[in-house]
Length: 360
Image 1 (cartoon, rainbow, N blue to C red):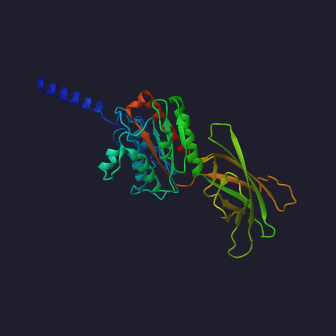
Image 2: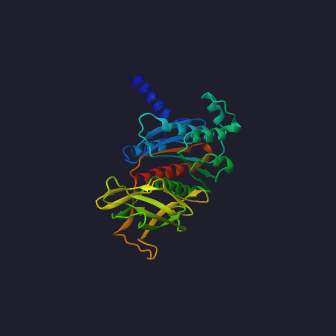
Image 3: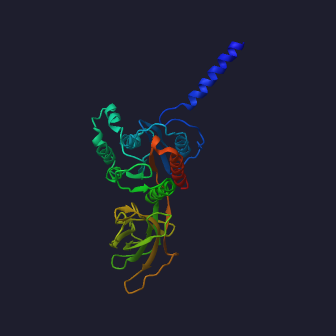
Protein backbone atom coordinates (compact mmCIF):
# COMPACT_ATOMS: atom_id res chain seq x y z
CA UNK A 1 0.00 0.00 0.00
CA UNK A 2 2.85 2.36 0.80
CA UNK A 3 4.21 1.85 -2.72
CA UNK A 4 0.81 2.56 -4.31
CA UNK A 5 0.42 5.80 -2.37
CA UNK A 6 3.91 6.77 -3.41
CA UNK A 7 3.12 6.12 -7.08
CA UNK A 8 -0.19 8.00 -6.81
CA UNK A 9 1.55 10.98 -5.21
CA UNK A 10 4.22 10.93 -7.91
CA UNK A 11 1.64 10.94 -10.73
CA UNK A 12 -0.27 13.76 -9.03
CA UNK A 13 2.87 15.89 -8.86
CA UNK A 14 3.60 15.21 -12.54
CA UNK A 15 0.04 16.12 -13.49
CA UNK A 16 0.26 19.40 -11.59
CA UNK A 17 3.60 20.16 -13.18
CA UNK A 18 2.16 19.55 -16.64
CA UNK A 19 -0.54 22.09 -15.95
CA UNK A 20 2.00 24.82 -15.29
CA UNK A 21 4.70 23.98 -17.83
CA UNK A 22 2.93 25.15 -20.98
CA UNK A 23 4.62 26.56 -24.04
CA UNK A 24 3.42 29.35 -26.34
CA UNK A 25 0.10 31.12 -25.90
CA UNK A 26 -1.09 28.41 -23.50
CA UNK A 27 -3.48 28.10 -20.61
CA UNK A 28 -2.73 29.94 -17.39
CA UNK A 29 -6.10 29.70 -15.69
CA UNK A 30 -9.78 30.32 -16.34
CA UNK A 31 -11.25 33.42 -14.75
CA UNK A 32 -13.60 34.42 -17.57
CA UNK A 33 -17.34 34.36 -17.94
CA UNK A 34 -18.28 31.56 -20.35
CA UNK A 35 -21.95 32.57 -20.61
CA UNK A 36 -21.83 36.18 -21.82
CA UNK A 37 -23.77 36.01 -25.08
CA UNK A 38 -24.62 38.83 -27.50
CA UNK A 39 -27.34 39.24 -30.11
CA UNK A 40 -25.34 41.69 -32.22
CA UNK A 41 -21.65 40.84 -31.87
CA UNK A 42 -19.70 37.67 -32.61
CA UNK A 43 -16.06 37.66 -31.45
CA UNK A 44 -13.10 35.43 -32.23
CA UNK A 45 -9.50 35.66 -31.03
CA UNK A 46 -6.09 34.85 -32.51
CA UNK A 47 -3.05 34.91 -30.21
CA UNK A 48 0.47 34.66 -31.55
CA UNK A 49 4.16 34.35 -30.72
CA UNK A 50 6.14 31.63 -32.55
CA UNK A 51 2.83 30.09 -33.65
CA UNK A 52 -0.87 31.00 -33.46
CA UNK A 53 -3.77 29.77 -31.36
CA UNK A 54 -7.40 30.42 -32.23
CA UNK A 55 -10.70 30.80 -30.40
CA UNK A 56 -13.42 30.51 -33.04
CA UNK A 57 -15.87 33.32 -33.75
CA UNK A 58 -18.92 33.03 -31.51
CA UNK A 59 -21.60 35.21 -29.96
CA UNK A 60 -20.62 33.75 -26.59
CA UNK A 61 -18.33 36.65 -25.71
CA UNK A 62 -17.43 34.97 -22.46
CA UNK A 63 -15.60 32.27 -24.41
CA UNK A 64 -13.40 34.89 -26.08
CA UNK A 65 -12.65 36.56 -22.74
CA UNK A 66 -11.78 33.24 -21.13
CA UNK A 67 -9.43 32.43 -24.01
CA UNK A 68 -7.67 35.79 -23.60
CA UNK A 69 -7.49 35.36 -19.85
CA UNK A 70 -5.97 31.90 -20.20
CA UNK A 71 -3.16 33.08 -22.47
CA UNK A 72 0.42 33.53 -21.27
CA UNK A 73 3.46 35.11 -22.90
CA UNK A 74 6.45 32.85 -22.44
CA UNK A 75 7.83 32.56 -26.00
CA UNK A 76 9.86 35.38 -27.54
CA UNK A 77 8.83 35.38 -31.22
CA UNK A 78 6.35 37.40 -33.31
CA UNK A 79 4.30 35.75 -36.08
CA UNK A 80 2.29 38.94 -36.52
CA UNK A 81 1.45 38.84 -40.24
CA UNK A 82 0.61 35.15 -40.29
CA UNK A 83 -1.77 35.76 -37.37
CA UNK A 84 -3.48 38.57 -39.30
CA UNK A 85 -3.94 36.25 -42.30
CA UNK A 86 -5.40 33.59 -40.02
CA UNK A 87 -7.73 36.18 -38.51
CA UNK A 88 -9.08 37.10 -41.95
CA UNK A 89 -9.62 33.42 -42.77
CA UNK A 90 -11.75 32.98 -39.63
CA UNK A 91 -14.62 34.87 -41.26
CA UNK A 92 -15.04 31.86 -43.58
CA UNK A 93 -15.71 29.64 -40.55
CA UNK A 94 -18.73 27.38 -41.14
CA UNK A 95 -21.95 28.00 -39.26
CA UNK A 96 -21.58 31.77 -38.94
CA UNK A 97 -24.46 34.13 -39.76
CA UNK A 98 -24.27 36.58 -42.67
CA UNK A 99 -22.49 39.54 -41.08
CA UNK A 100 -23.51 43.11 -41.86
CA UNK A 101 -20.05 44.31 -40.81
CA UNK A 102 -16.73 42.58 -40.12
CA UNK A 103 -13.80 43.97 -38.14
CA UNK A 104 -10.28 42.85 -37.32
CA UNK A 105 -8.22 44.48 -34.53
CA UNK A 106 -4.51 43.68 -34.26
CA UNK A 107 -2.19 44.43 -31.32
CA UNK A 108 1.60 43.99 -31.24
CA UNK A 109 4.68 45.39 -29.55
CA UNK A 110 7.22 44.57 -32.25
CA UNK A 111 8.17 43.65 -35.78
CA UNK A 112 7.31 40.32 -37.39
CA UNK A 113 10.22 37.85 -37.16
CA UNK A 114 8.49 34.50 -37.63
CA UNK A 115 5.67 34.50 -40.24
CA UNK A 116 7.64 33.37 -43.30
CA UNK A 117 8.16 29.83 -42.01
CA UNK A 118 4.47 29.52 -41.04
CA UNK A 119 3.28 30.73 -44.44
CA UNK A 120 5.61 28.21 -46.08
CA UNK A 121 4.20 25.42 -43.88
CA UNK A 122 0.79 26.39 -45.32
CA UNK A 123 2.10 26.07 -48.85
CA UNK A 124 2.64 29.79 -49.52
CA UNK A 125 6.14 30.78 -50.66
CA UNK A 126 6.49 34.03 -48.72
CA UNK A 127 9.90 35.43 -47.80
CA UNK A 128 10.30 37.22 -44.49
CA UNK A 129 10.72 40.54 -46.31
CA UNK A 130 7.27 40.13 -47.86
CA UNK A 131 5.19 39.00 -44.90
CA UNK A 132 3.51 42.41 -44.47
CA UNK A 133 2.69 42.46 -48.18
CA UNK A 134 1.11 39.01 -47.84
CA UNK A 135 -0.99 40.07 -44.83
CA UNK A 136 -2.15 43.17 -46.71
CA UNK A 137 -3.12 41.03 -49.70
CA UNK A 138 -5.12 38.70 -47.46
CA UNK A 139 -6.94 41.66 -45.92
CA UNK A 140 -7.73 42.88 -49.43
CA UNK A 141 -9.49 39.60 -50.19
CA UNK A 142 -12.34 40.98 -48.05
CA UNK A 143 -12.72 44.60 -49.20
CA UNK A 144 -15.62 45.17 -46.81
CA UNK A 145 -13.42 44.31 -43.81
CA UNK A 146 -12.45 47.15 -41.46
CA UNK A 147 -9.03 46.41 -40.05
CA UNK A 148 -7.45 48.32 -37.15
CA UNK A 149 -3.94 48.06 -35.73
CA UNK A 150 -2.42 49.01 -32.37
CA UNK A 151 1.33 49.42 -31.99
CA UNK A 152 2.71 49.31 -28.44
CA UNK A 153 5.88 51.40 -28.65
CA UNK A 154 6.78 51.05 -25.00
CA UNK A 155 9.09 48.05 -25.53
CA UNK A 156 10.47 48.08 -29.06
CA UNK A 157 10.76 50.31 -32.10
CA UNK A 158 7.85 49.68 -34.48
CA UNK A 159 8.01 50.43 -38.18
CA UNK A 160 4.94 52.62 -38.68
CA UNK A 161 4.89 52.01 -42.44
CA UNK A 162 4.75 48.26 -41.91
CA UNK A 163 1.99 48.59 -39.33
CA UNK A 164 -0.14 50.74 -41.62
CA UNK A 165 -0.17 47.89 -44.14
CA UNK A 166 -2.30 46.03 -41.59
CA UNK A 167 -4.98 48.77 -41.68
CA UNK A 168 -7.88 48.65 -44.14
CA UNK A 169 -10.88 50.98 -43.85
CA UNK A 170 -9.92 51.46 -40.19
CA UNK A 171 -7.25 53.29 -38.23
CA UNK A 172 -3.80 52.85 -36.70
CA UNK A 173 -3.26 53.75 -33.04
CA UNK A 174 -0.18 53.71 -30.84
CA UNK A 175 0.25 53.27 -27.10
CA UNK A 176 3.50 54.69 -25.75
CA UNK A 177 3.23 52.95 -22.39
CA UNK A 178 1.10 50.33 -20.74
CA UNK A 179 -1.13 52.89 -19.01
CA UNK A 180 -2.51 53.94 -22.41
CA UNK A 181 -3.58 50.48 -23.55
CA UNK A 182 -7.08 50.53 -22.09
CA UNK A 183 -7.85 53.92 -23.68
CA UNK A 184 -6.54 52.89 -27.10
CA UNK A 185 -8.55 49.66 -27.12
CA UNK A 186 -11.65 51.58 -26.02
CA UNK A 187 -11.19 54.15 -28.80
CA UNK A 188 -11.25 51.36 -31.36
CA UNK A 189 -14.24 49.70 -29.67
CA UNK A 190 -16.05 53.04 -29.98
CA UNK A 191 -15.19 53.18 -33.68
CA UNK A 192 -16.49 49.64 -34.15
CA UNK A 193 -19.74 50.60 -32.41
CA UNK A 194 -20.07 53.79 -34.45
CA UNK A 195 -19.66 51.77 -37.64
CA UNK A 196 -22.24 49.22 -36.46
CA UNK A 197 -25.05 51.57 -35.48
CA UNK A 198 -28.27 52.02 -37.37
CA UNK A 199 -29.19 55.71 -37.36
CA UNK A 200 -32.67 56.46 -38.64
CA UNK A 201 -34.27 59.83 -39.34
CA UNK A 202 -37.93 59.80 -38.29
CA UNK A 203 -40.21 62.53 -39.60
CA UNK A 204 -43.96 63.10 -39.80
CA UNK A 205 -45.78 61.95 -42.92
CA UNK A 206 -47.39 64.34 -45.38
CA UNK A 207 -47.62 65.19 -49.06
CA UNK A 208 -44.22 66.48 -50.17
CA UNK A 209 -43.80 67.04 -53.90
CA UNK A 210 -40.77 67.77 -56.07
CA UNK A 211 -41.91 71.39 -56.26
CA UNK A 212 -42.77 71.63 -52.56
CA UNK A 213 -40.53 69.13 -50.72
CA UNK A 214 -39.77 68.95 -47.05
CA UNK A 215 -36.31 70.44 -46.50
CA UNK A 216 -33.75 69.23 -43.96
CA UNK A 217 -30.58 70.59 -42.39
CA UNK A 218 -28.54 67.89 -40.62
CA UNK A 219 -25.74 68.99 -38.29
CA UNK A 220 -23.44 66.10 -37.43
CA UNK A 221 -21.24 66.36 -34.33
CA UNK A 222 -18.28 63.99 -34.12
CA UNK A 223 -15.11 63.46 -32.11
CA UNK A 224 -11.94 61.46 -32.58
CA UNK A 225 -13.12 59.12 -29.80
CA UNK A 226 -15.74 59.02 -27.08
CA UNK A 227 -13.35 59.97 -24.26
CA UNK A 228 -12.17 63.36 -25.59
CA UNK A 229 -13.85 66.74 -25.88
CA UNK A 230 -12.47 67.82 -29.26
CA UNK A 231 -15.71 67.95 -31.26
CA UNK A 232 -16.20 68.77 -34.92
CA UNK A 233 -19.35 69.54 -36.86
CA UNK A 234 -20.45 69.00 -40.42
CA UNK A 235 -23.64 70.10 -42.18
CA UNK A 236 -25.66 68.28 -44.83
CA UNK A 237 -28.76 69.57 -46.61
CA UNK A 238 -31.45 67.39 -48.16
CA UNK A 239 -35.03 67.19 -49.35
CA UNK A 240 -37.83 64.68 -48.85
CA UNK A 241 -40.37 63.85 -51.54
CA UNK A 242 -43.39 61.65 -50.76
CA UNK A 243 -46.48 61.46 -52.96
CA UNK A 244 -48.68 60.43 -50.08
CA UNK A 245 -51.95 58.88 -51.23
CA UNK A 246 -50.56 57.50 -54.48
CA UNK A 247 -50.47 53.73 -54.79
CA UNK A 248 -46.98 52.25 -54.34
CA UNK A 249 -45.50 55.66 -53.45
CA UNK A 250 -42.34 55.52 -51.33
CA UNK A 251 -40.64 58.36 -49.47
CA UNK A 252 -37.38 59.48 -51.08
CA UNK A 253 -34.69 61.57 -49.38
CA UNK A 254 -31.97 63.16 -51.54
CA UNK A 255 -28.89 65.10 -50.45
CA UNK A 256 -28.92 68.56 -52.04
CA UNK A 257 -25.64 69.76 -50.50
CA UNK A 258 -23.00 67.31 -49.29
CA UNK A 259 -21.05 67.65 -46.07
CA UNK A 260 -17.27 68.01 -45.97
CA UNK A 261 -16.66 64.85 -43.93
CA UNK A 262 -19.97 62.98 -43.55
CA UNK A 263 -21.25 60.42 -46.03
CA UNK A 264 -24.08 57.89 -46.18
CA UNK A 265 -25.92 56.00 -48.90
CA UNK A 266 -27.78 58.50 -51.08
CA UNK A 267 -30.58 58.69 -52.10
CA UNK A 268 -32.56 57.04 -49.31
CA UNK A 269 -35.77 55.15 -49.93
CA UNK A 270 -37.82 55.28 -46.76
CA UNK A 271 -40.71 53.38 -45.26
CA UNK A 272 -43.82 54.50 -43.39
CA UNK A 273 -44.82 53.22 -39.95
CA UNK A 274 -47.37 54.62 -37.47
CA UNK A 275 -47.53 58.05 -39.05
CA UNK A 276 -43.77 58.42 -39.35
CA UNK A 277 -41.47 58.25 -42.36
CA UNK A 278 -38.34 56.25 -41.51
CA UNK A 279 -35.15 57.13 -43.40
CA UNK A 280 -32.13 54.92 -42.56
CA UNK A 281 -28.65 56.46 -42.89
CA UNK A 282 -26.92 53.34 -44.17
CA UNK A 283 -23.10 53.30 -44.15
CA UNK A 284 -22.99 56.56 -42.24
CA UNK A 285 -19.40 57.75 -41.70
CA UNK A 286 -17.60 60.87 -40.52
CA UNK A 287 -14.07 60.74 -41.93
CA UNK A 288 -11.50 63.45 -41.21
CA UNK A 289 -7.92 63.21 -42.48
CA UNK A 290 -8.47 59.54 -43.42
CA UNK A 291 -9.59 58.70 -39.87
CA UNK A 292 -13.15 57.67 -39.05
CA UNK A 293 -14.53 59.72 -36.18
CA UNK A 294 -17.09 58.80 -33.53
CA UNK A 295 -20.51 60.37 -34.30
CA UNK A 296 -21.99 61.80 -31.13
CA UNK A 297 -25.23 63.33 -32.39
CA UNK A 298 -27.21 64.55 -35.39
CA UNK A 299 -29.26 67.71 -34.99
CA UNK A 300 -32.28 67.80 -37.34
CA UNK A 301 -33.82 71.08 -38.53
CA UNK A 302 -36.66 71.45 -41.04
CA UNK A 303 -38.42 73.99 -43.18
CA UNK A 304 -40.86 73.90 -46.10
CA UNK A 305 -39.49 76.69 -48.26
CA UNK A 306 -36.26 78.65 -48.47
CA UNK A 307 -37.89 81.85 -47.19
CA UNK A 308 -38.56 80.32 -43.77
CA UNK A 309 -35.89 80.02 -41.07
CA UNK A 310 -34.58 76.58 -40.07
CA UNK A 311 -36.26 75.25 -36.94
CA UNK A 312 -35.77 72.24 -34.69
CA UNK A 313 -38.99 70.36 -33.93
CA UNK A 314 -38.30 67.06 -32.20
CA UNK A 315 -42.00 66.15 -32.28
CA UNK A 316 -41.87 66.31 -36.05
CA UNK A 317 -38.34 65.08 -36.86
CA UNK A 318 -35.49 63.45 -34.96
CA UNK A 319 -32.97 60.63 -35.21
CA UNK A 320 -32.84 57.35 -33.31
CA UNK A 321 -30.01 54.87 -33.11
CA UNK A 322 -29.60 51.22 -32.25
CA UNK A 323 -27.50 48.23 -33.17
CA UNK A 324 -29.66 45.62 -34.84
CA UNK A 325 -26.96 44.57 -37.27
CA UNK A 326 -24.96 41.37 -36.95
CA UNK A 327 -21.26 42.12 -36.57
CA UNK A 328 -18.19 39.88 -36.62
CA UNK A 329 -15.00 40.91 -34.79
CA UNK A 330 -11.64 39.15 -34.60
CA UNK A 331 -8.97 40.24 -32.10
CA UNK A 332 -5.38 39.41 -33.07
CA UNK A 333 -3.22 39.67 -29.94
CA UNK A 334 0.54 39.50 -29.51
CA UNK A 335 1.53 37.22 -26.61
CA UNK A 336 5.30 37.32 -27.08
CA UNK A 337 7.67 37.28 -24.12
CA UNK A 338 8.91 40.80 -24.88
CA UNK A 339 5.69 42.24 -23.45
CA UNK A 340 6.78 41.16 -19.99
CA UNK A 341 4.53 42.29 -17.16
CA UNK A 342 2.63 44.63 -19.50
CA UNK A 343 0.88 41.58 -20.97
CA UNK A 344 -1.60 41.45 -18.09
CA UNK A 345 -2.67 44.98 -19.03
CA UNK A 346 -3.03 43.90 -22.65
CA UNK A 347 -5.34 41.09 -21.52
CA UNK A 348 -7.36 43.48 -19.39
CA UNK A 349 -7.70 46.02 -22.21
CA UNK A 350 -8.75 43.34 -24.70
CA UNK A 351 -11.40 41.98 -22.33
CA UNK A 352 -12.67 45.52 -21.69
CA UNK A 353 -12.89 45.95 -25.46
CA UNK A 354 -15.25 42.95 -25.59
CA UNK A 355 -17.25 44.27 -22.62
CA UNK A 356 -17.77 47.57 -24.47
CA UNK A 357 -19.28 45.67 -27.41
CA UNK A 358 -21.39 43.59 -25.01
CA UNK A 359 -23.20 46.71 -23.75
CA UNK A 360 -25.14 46.82 -27.04
